[in-house]
Image 1 (spheres, rainbow, N blue to C red):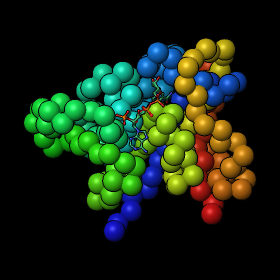
Image 2: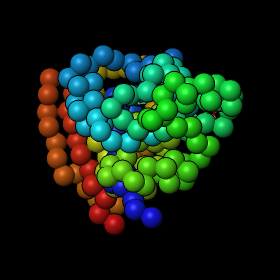
Image 3: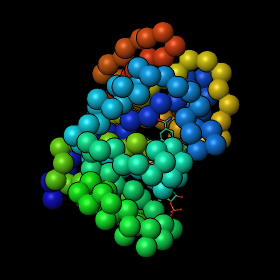
Length: 173
Ligand SMILES: NC(=O)c1ccc[n+]([C@@H]2O[C@H](COP(=O)([O-])OP(=O)(O)OC[C@H]3O[C@@H](n4cnc5c(N)ncnc54)[C@H](OP(=O)(O)O)[C@@H]3O)[C@@H](O)[C@H]2O)c1
């Protein structure tokens, strides 16, 4: 089976790894949203059911192949959505199935949320992280990842901007 580059893409507070509040992002950073769109366009994206329902409000990214991981979405709802978006929306019941379904893509972006990040952090080839400065409260946290740096992943790029920075990590083993 062909395997795409698996890329985790996430924005998190630099101070405490907060990444979500009440089903939404805790901030609005247009530059980061544009960068996110530019990176994912034309590729596969994989997300958990909560991110699909609350964050992206059940609207698939039109220029991506959207894969939603869920065990609870009713069959009739899935059928209706897949009829509405026949070519770029798919529901699967596990992470291995999601990875199998994107095997024909060159890049597959894991776009959250926390439950999906924590299960894929170690199997990803690349992390594209946006570290947001400031104090944020939230209910969802990006998993601890720092312990893998130097051991399994290394930083290959860092870009500083007012209020946030981008860091790219690549797997080394
Ligand atoms: N800052 C960022 O970059 C970013 C990115 C994305 C999301 N977010 C935020 O993250 C929050 C949502 O994250 P979350 O952790 O609550 O939810 P999530 O990861 O989006 O979705 C969790 C759901 O995914 C399904 N799932 C997870 N693991 C599975 C597995 N192994 N097999 C089958 N299904 C599985 C389950 O759906 P079922 O219950 O249907 O089985 C589970 O309830 C929101 O606040 C959102 O705004 C932030």
